[in-house]
Image (cartoon, rainbow, N blue to C red; front, side, top):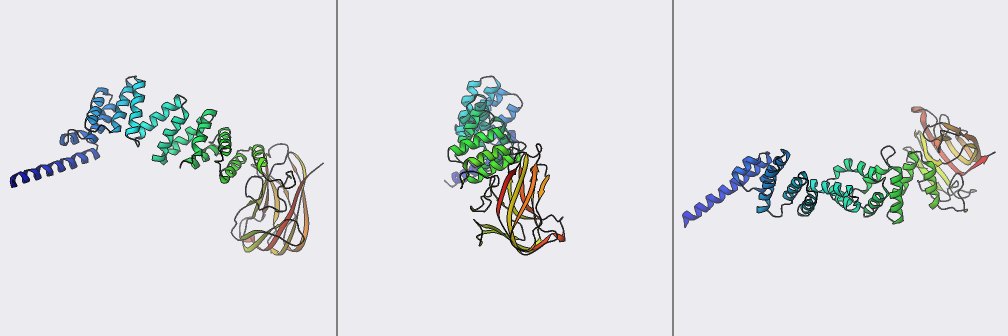
Length: 399
């Protein structure tokens, strides 16, 4: 009995040793050596089949894959190799059937997912294709860099865009990256992005942040009219109409989106919106902390057609000190051409009215920005201290 136990122990040890040697040989990309230790080692047979397939020996690859399935019937990668053999032999129906089996038996086999995605795209079966792409991107998020440009290109087709919108409505982890690719000002697809965003919005699946970024992307592409039309369709209109300059008395908290006021955090500036005696609505209150400040952090995009305009506002200040005073500027989007500059704001003053007239040229100025800036070049002279209140902005066309 003792001898039997010794023999069994030696046999078990040898099996373990052989298994370890076979695994190491596979790791070293030496499947033939691994098979010398374990003739039916599935991992080695799969690696051997891959090599045989790459060498064009279809029969040998098929035989190796079948040996794998004889020992491990659930090994999905072997079905994928059989599918590749069938495809190279021109049997498309058999290849599809085997790839489908491979994707079920080995859900994480990326080549099977990729082949099925391509097949369904070619057949116009977009929901099925996107299901495969969803699996690919969940398993391998880094593939988004290669897949997103394909999605952007395919989204030019309305049927695919609708299917993609339906998939994105489920909030997959790759949603943000794909939407960003669609909105991209250079490599994106504005028409497809619009269709997908509209579909998401109709389904109630578009967040406010995504909607705001969509409008910004339209503006970045020079599509100011479209951005304004989309924004205007849903924005509150307190007096039943939209003025050329929106929310001029800060009666509503700035939304920081669309064609409302934009608030930017600027080091050295405290910005808030407060009530003040003798004014309607609220005032923008800026407290400058005696630091170098290039701008006030307050701006608004405008959509003005060619013509003459007058902009008015009210301001008051306490101990507002800077080299040249703060000023409002109206600037053409894209070119950066300054259309108008206000009188400098500085010193001490009670509520005072300011006006500035300017003209928008017929070309080269698809949209404009109204910005509060410090006109002093970068350097020590940019320091600003004191307090400033602003309200009562109006913008009217002039004949």
